[in-house]
Image (cartoon, rainbow, N blue to C red; front, top):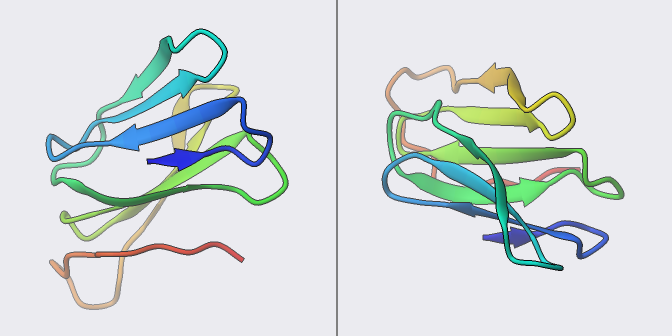
Length: 91
């Protein structure tokens, strides 16, 4: 799980590959992304903004989700196919 930089949102990822985004004010899940084919291993928001969340997964992808349009806008894969990713950081 990860808190947004402004503390208004929480993003969670599960072994089922789903990413859920919640409000901290009323603890409601307002979107669920189901694009990963493996469990979520790490999750982070873009620094200084709360409009995108990035996730890494056992399926070997990093996905970036737009929290305004509610869709995946980028999929990144390592050069070696099938490599499970265990952590993620954003600069």
